[in-house]
Every structure is written in structure tokens, then in C-alpha cells.
Figure (cartoon, rainbow, N blue to C red):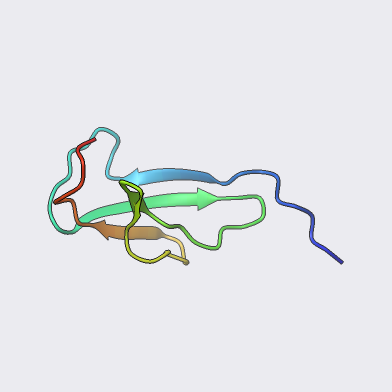
Length: 73
């Protein structure tokens, strides 16, 4: 039996840093929550279109962001 198609997109929310916060440094902490009706396998953080580390499979989802060299905003 084939599983039904997952037609609902996931919901993702950045939990840190706070919206509008300024971050800097070589290990700025970022974290997120994610949910989906068919389950979440992992979260891949990105900045400027580039992956930040490897996909983080177990919740809670987090990564360290190296900010030097990233565009502002």
C-alpha cells in the first residue's frame, strides 16, 4: 500500500535570535521549531543561500552561525 501524498507544507518558526535582533560573531546561536502533518525528518538552516552546517535531524533544531562575511539583513 502506498502512503498518501503529503500536500500540506511544513510550518517553521525561528525561535532565536528574536525578530529584529542584531547578531554577530563566529558562533551566534540560531534555533527553530518545525512541524508537518506527515512529520519532520530534519531542518536545514541556510544563510545567503548557503547551508549552515549539516541538516539537524532531532528536535530541538539549532545551529551555530558564523556571521562574518554574511550580508546584513
